[in-house]
Image: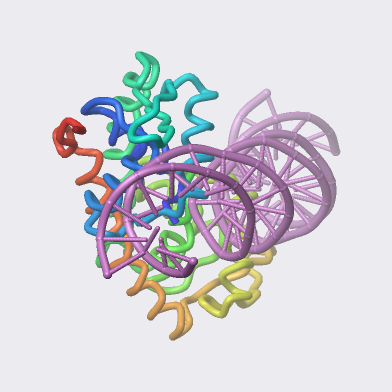
Length: 108
Length: 108
DNA sequence: GCGGGAAGAGTAGTATTACTACCTATGAGG
DNA sequence: CCTCATAGGTAGTAATACTACTCTTCCCGC
């Protein structure tokens, strides 16, 4: 369960240049040390969602007789990724603080 | 949007001792610097869910003519919180790494 | 004595999300 | 020929956090 941060991760894989869907899946798996080995049923619908939202743009090509859909970040997507990054930093800092061992004074 | 980590946060507020629902809400708001100011429509159903799952136990009391439901962690809940903490550490480390500025080599 | 806000608990219904389970096709290697 | 990896996809489901509301009591200001 990626709990709402999937979009950011997908966009992050595209920050270095276009990739096709399957390569995104592999990049996510490799980059997370195998922790995020997402089923295609998670990846593809999410990509379609991002495309509908105008954050990424896809285009068909054929490589070795296999059709591929390559995605790249749009300008909007790039801005969204920046926002997502800082929002993640804030969010994770807050959660980490709250989850820390001793932040909760004994209630009155 | 707390994206699946709400349960862990709720349980964390109870790690220092029992609290009633509204106090949990306030603790979360204060402890997050106002970032997690959750509506009661998020808090209460989540507490009921945790209670049904046996992770927390609630009991009614009356203070100043107002009825209160105080919750405390069960033994199971305490173990679950420990697991959630380490799962969060793993998860957030992985996401932070993937979201970092330069982890994505230009695709072939 | 009255209105409004804070304390306190709750429900109903909704939108989104990531999931399982499936289907299709090609190329390479045994 | 068969299977695996590559590559893309859909349908349907369960869970989750949300909005929007209800109900009550206490306290403070006017």
